[in-house]
Length: 368
Ligand SMILES: [Zn+2]
Image (cartoon, rainbow, N blue to C red; front, side, top):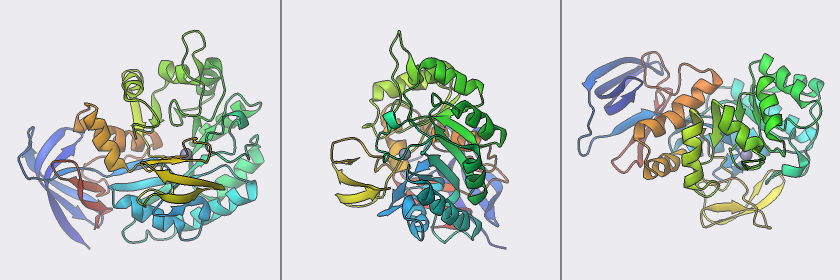
């Protein structure tokens, strides 16, 4: 049906090529072109669209609003090159979370609204976290019950669950989730190193915003952060350069092979300074940060194009940064046809100028 193309210097799993990407019915049909190790002035750099596994909001809308919020959020992030994402819930009373899950389930089952990133499912961030490590999560943390999770999994495609493994019963929950192919991620935790290792042994496969809202790495008490450094294969991190110091990011890059980037972005993303809400919390955006009244960081205003520029500014190659923004998050979820420019994959593409500013975006072949 619909066939078109885009051209420039594009990154494939085998390296850079220069030429034409032919798109048919939303997927990459043919890759024409020759190897192109070096860039030419003025040409577009085309990367796989960014995949953000931790999104609370954008464009003034918050996931917990339900209704049209998902479309507003997905359109806002699409403008910055994010072509698929996980809507991420906040800790809240059970009925509130389940109302949002039902709404996401309906949204995910409906056709993708024009101009919006693909919603791949849900990242459930809370309520199964430690009340002593809420970060900016409202105070509704609770112990997970398998019958609740059974019901919640039927409401929406839950792909990731953040969980504190030190809470009694939660290792069984980790096992339950991993048996269903849902990624259990250690986070919002006051657990020890041993708690982190046990979680991995029970099937946990990642860590939620490494360093933030978890026990830190001390050489005699290595904490959850130490467990991630010593054992994690995949792990998420917020590279806004506010949540984590660049030195700590460099250390993590040396330790964790498939460290990938998330925004943890809130309603204030893509919006002017001012007051917003994050779940039940009122938050303030100022100086590029979102904080609670007491100064606690409350998510970010990061978009993944800025994450790319931050990583490259830190010294990563564009190729390495791109893998951490697209390929690794897709691989982590077991999605083979996104996160890479390859024949048969969805035509999720972001084109950038020489300063890595977004100039064009394709989502499943749709040109924004
Ligand atoms: Zn979050």
